[in-house]
Image 1: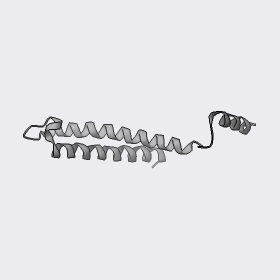
Image 2: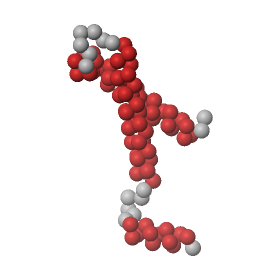
Image 3: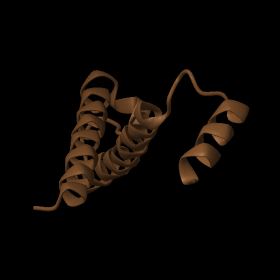
Image 4: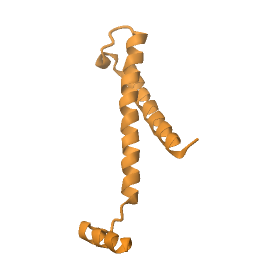
Length: 91
């Protein structure tokens, strides 16, 4: 499997599982917070799991992408210094 596909599936999947666990824990601890009355409607609960999971999944993917970008940036490099270094490297 290509690295990019594995990266996206892994991060979105982990985020989705965290979101689903969050929705389930809220529904168990405080069912009224999600609009569930006395009973738990399976369709509504499934849609809430999907909503939490999709949000958390995309958030986890965006966080992973930002963390990779921060690893690529040289912390000793400021804007003027980096531009001079890049211009020197082009020769």
